[in-house]
Image: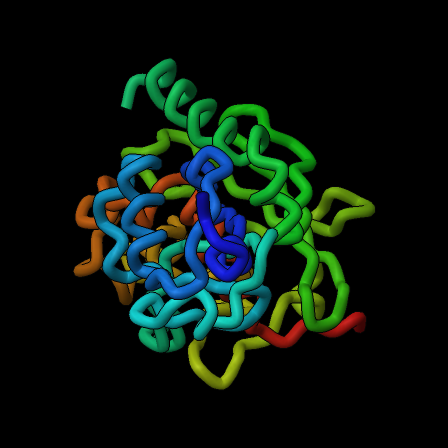
Length: 96
Length: 162
């Protein structure tokens, strides 16, 4: 059985993408787990392959996948958005 | 692209949005119409609370990327260019006119969004070397993720009531 401290370190998180959502089927994630690990599981579950240019956000804040859930300020019940980063507009369009 | 196959791809992509309430709430999207080839979405600008209505035309999806226009949500007509979002310091996306066809024909009165994944970008005279073919099979350029990228740009742009 998990200790009280271990229980306190476990949170629920949902990753939402345009391909679907991942919450580990209700699994509780360790606050000290790296965000990249969670995203890896999400990518596998949702069948995402090319995500190298994607960003993960909580509200308007961009998160750092190399840091843990707690270091990213993720609390239980959080919904984080994972989506491609747009590649910038084209100033060339202004030349006519 | 065969019209029926295009319709199926559109339906599949749209259902991934319409069936995902969490996603719609998080992004502040309200889908107003989803009937091939038209996807019409109201987006809420988080910084101001203002709404803008985007209409994407997915005709010939995904051999062609969607064309985009901003609509007046009350009249259904084109949104006056004065109401279009204004470019953030980080990029040039919104153009109040002067779209140039592949053959070089200048259309002064046609506002457009300049962003990879949008038809007006790939068919603009200045971007003929950046064809849609190299994007169409990427995860970042699915129907939903094109909408997401438009939304990202909208969120970081300046939007004013008048």
